[in-house]
Length: 552
Image (cartoon, rainbow, N blue to C red; front, side, top):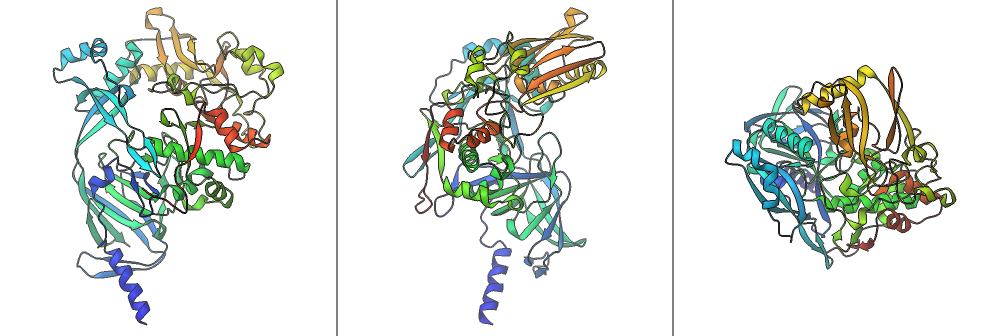
């Protein structure tokens, strides 16, 4: 009896958040944290809400009501979370013009030419540089992901910054991203209801054990809705965000996080060495991103394709768990430190250089390379895929690791997408409107203006019947989005009287590891070390920390 009372009292004690010390400032802080044993502790965004949130309790919960009484909520009870924003918080918006290693000196004068016209209209706009990222030492290994950002701003509203962002992109071919400088945090009330009865209200944050609840109808999509009903290990935080809504953050040790990432990113039934390669790549990529994105969100990374697809407990699988166990603590490093371990579904037979896709300096570990098995028939493509040979490469590809795996989805290695002329014109009209382009373009033709080493189109000219209305779209992802989200920018074009066909290869940006290719290599007997060294040039695989001895 005494033991039972003791357990109940402990449950109440924790449910009342008497030990909770997480503040809104700590959620927004971009500093790597650790568990008591020294394992990296990750804050990952698992949902955003602009309305109420529905939960189902998986165990009984004791919580303090608004009248200060302890209320017992039964297992399987449905809980509704509602919120009231008190202050929106303040943030300054800047454009990231360029990025450098953190120790670099930046000559601001060379960038003044690009921004001088904007500064004429607003004397408060300046160029400045800042350092972002983290420096950590784990088991004697230095993990330095600091980098220097060159910023232009500040801007007071989204509309202005988006307009200038597009102008720099369209007229000057400058890829920019947005940096949000937090000046003050949003605040408000988060309230819990059960059967429309108010139970409790919390200031700014509500914290609960992840496994004690199931989230209902949470969107984990990026751009397109994707709904699931997840359960998460670790802690869940519901906090007021800058979008006048609520963010859901999961705080979880990295090795546990990987249990919900690896089988979401690759088939759990894939060969074990492909699973291990995916695990090491995912672990590396998570650690390399901390402090370098989601600057004004209450988490380090998000659980979508923008960062890492993460679905939590429901997709844990014994095979991916074994891959995580067997590669515990392993990451990839090159001469510059921990690498950005990008990957995509299918390279189409050749991977791409990182600087051709994103605002980033070229990295030796992210060089585009062939994925060929059939060397006898691949010689003509050894210098890369060009405008002169891209049609032959797509129509008559040599055998590649990306084309052979039994797991590869049909329509990923090679594909065809058809549009009517009316659909093409709608794409053009929408792009002109969104990007504030002075053009009344009536479509006539498309002409690639440059390709990366993999054959992916880096610049696509839209030729209009009135030539002065013609314009060019720059960037791999921008081109895919412009054309109705093509699977990749590796394509050539076929025209007829009433339609246009984009005939292409691959699925995704093509930088780093090809996931289907990793499966193909594993099926051919390659180890996960072989796979990683094939796709990431010049890397070493190190054990950052050990399971039996983790120290900060």
